[in-house]
Length: 179
Image (cartoon, rainbow, N blue to C red; front, side, top):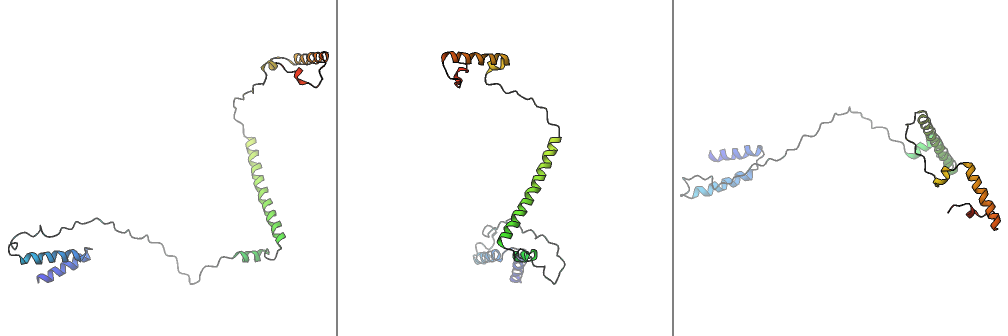
């Protein structure tokens, strides 16, 4: 009965996901140790292999999906490009007519977009703008900023008369530029 018990243990452990080769190796070593009379009364655990259990990750069960009701008929076939053209009448149109239709569609799309942008601009113009500090741009010539208009006209007239005295042409602008 001893062999039957050992065979039963191998099968039970096999069902517990332990490979039978471990048991076979253990049984072979025990058979060799039983032949030696010196080791017959000793503990054999030091000779027998110690297999460490490994924590192997198990597969998670697959997510069950809800089954849809069975329909014997397949879904309707999606129409091809040619089928769509036949329905709209574009298939028999000439190339020029197709191009004209595409241009017309683009114009329609662009007009829709422009209307939307115009509405956005109108909404933005009706909103109150934030009060920000407006910086005045500095003028290029600080001396001209301080002078009034009469002084500037007098200066130009004086330069023109001086140019006439020296014989320079009227179109020469170097007379009016300060150095």
